[in-house]
Amino acid sequence: MFAPIPRKIVVALVILLIFYAVGFYGLVYSNYQAYFLRLVSFNLLLTNFILFIFHRDVSRSFWVFALIVFLTGFFAEVIGIHTALLFGHYAYGASLGWQLFRVPVIIGLNWLMLVYTSGHLINYLLQTPWWVKSIIAATLMVALDYFIEPVAIALDFWSWRSGEIPLSNFTGWFGVALLLQVYFQKAKFLKNNTLAPFVFLLQCLFFIALYVVI
Image 1 (cartoon, helix red, strand yellow):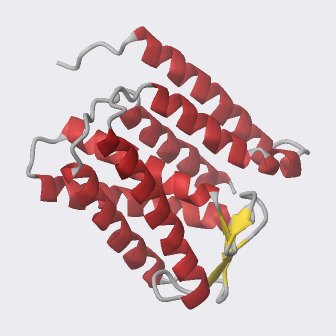
Image 2: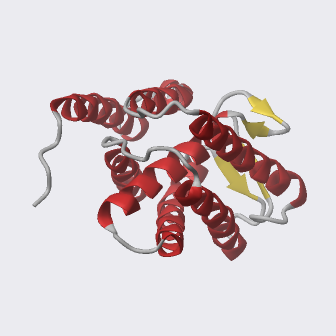
């Protein structure tokens, strides 16, 4: 039997669902898409703020983990943008806010959120060795990226030089995601954020819905 969801988690989920529902409507059906695009970064910041309110372990191990994942994700994108070695030839648009080295700074936070939430989801669902969890969680991240990619192109998050999403994007994503998932599994901090699995599932719901209608 699944344990009942704490009331605080339900409240947080309702808040996030409202924001994502409004964002979905604004991006797809309203006449103010440009305005809602400017709020994408804010929505990501809000999601992370609410997510990490429920993280109870503020030990040095966690902060080191968060910083390393943020920087690894960000600089993997920097390398990808400037060399095409990891993901292919692509460039970021203006929708994701302030950029450093031609990469939106908030991308590092997105990597952290996805690693953290998918890792929690797999820990919740499976009682398997750490390496199995790492592979499955990385695969989930790549599966989510499959739905994100066409949406990102349509909304000017980023674009591909060839106009098509290359296979190297997904293999590169899997490689970086697997490395970070191994780190998540081995890092010595408490991993009991009850909201985290729901945040990952909400990301999936949001981008799959956009994938269907855009």
